[in-house]
Length: 461
Image (tube, rainbow, N blue to C red; front, side):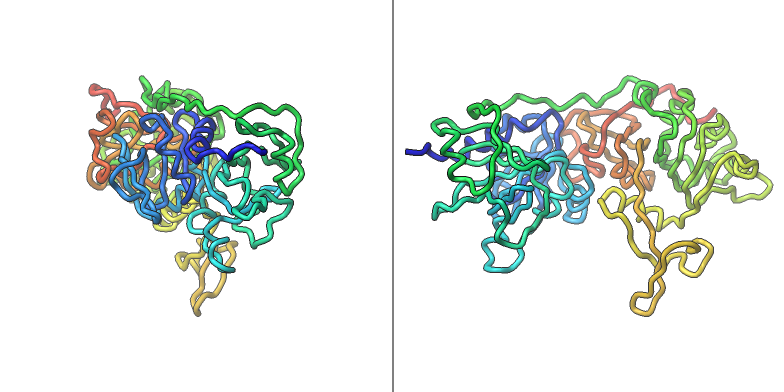
């Protein structure tokens, strides 16, 4: 007699062993929703639902997906909309996606169970976004269908929802790693033998060292994101980094303390992405000695700026960047303000390029692919990504959730989504739960480091 298939709760507990502190975990519909109940008080991870929940555990009283799975919002959790969720899933912000396919092939193709159940129609829901955006995709699946046929095949028999996307299969009988070399059986459920698992799998399995599955759920804690100073938060910025630096013409929304830290580090060859390249000093909104991007330019740290308003409004008062550019010391890419915002949004949302009418037929459109759509000319623009991002918030909790004050948010929220490492400067850090889930603007899953602007710090030199 073969072994008994695991109860879904045990499968969920095995999935929990793939998590790590601070992981962002997207849950597809179906079996993956056993994971919230398996975790200990959220277990130090960000669980993401396609309906807009960020940070929860289950079961609870609030419906979190189309199947009416219920959850409890954790302290520090937030709500967001479907557009933002799509960007999180597609933009590479999830560490692990847990999906329930109906079929998985030897090379990691999958057919989602919602597609398999629709009699020849595609119905992948969020599964495709989750699969293509996550660093790791875990397929949670019954090893066999009700008729005894295998769900793990040499090749899928239905049109696939994801090509080569699955990295691991956790079934009710085994754990199988998926790689370019095929399928490797690494664990079997209690009561099963290797031969029994091989016999009910319709794909070739490589076998080396196989162990019995365990079900101990790890106790994880969110990593500490609070840094003691700007220098500590930025000390690993390498030369040549692409850095998002927020700010409009005036001082509002600029991370002055972090700018000073970046200047004091002295790293060279920086490529700044910003609305301006430092005009607060020379505009009517600032003051002659305000801290802005100019301190980096004057320190010979800036190799290039991508900006929409890089020059002074007064020809008689050129900015530090203008002077450096005219001396041939730095490069410049001028981007219309709305296009800059959209390039950042697309970069953070996993969209490589888009068409816009802005700039078509002008110098800004020269050398760019053009296309007529609906009788109107459009040009192709590419999404922007950065290595680091320094932004300015009003308050943050220790998980990295950020709120802003008034219009000082400007480019801050969208810039936070585009960087490998986002550092936020705030006036105050509070405990999780002190910022309401409805008021959080930048969810903590986008923020890696937090520093408090010292009370004695001045934004003026």
